[in-house]
Length: 83
Image (cartoon, rainbow, N blue to C red):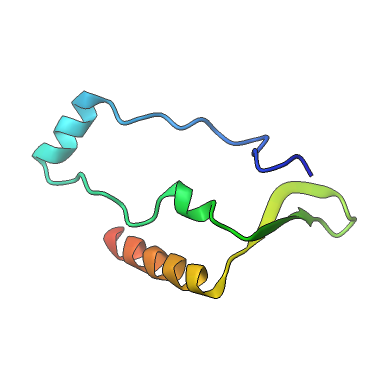
């Protein structure tokens, strides 16, 4: 395993001020309930292997039950915002 650093992760870019002004003007800017940092609070992670035992570069993560419930609630809240 290569640690907790994704090797193929796309870079994140902040929202620029012109776009943010536009989104606010038309009431389209909102804070999302789920943040990337929330997903990093897992207890353990293990490499996900394909059917031949080769590393897929994905990881399977496990959360404490209370953490899992909070994440599920945040996912549900965020899904409701997308419709």
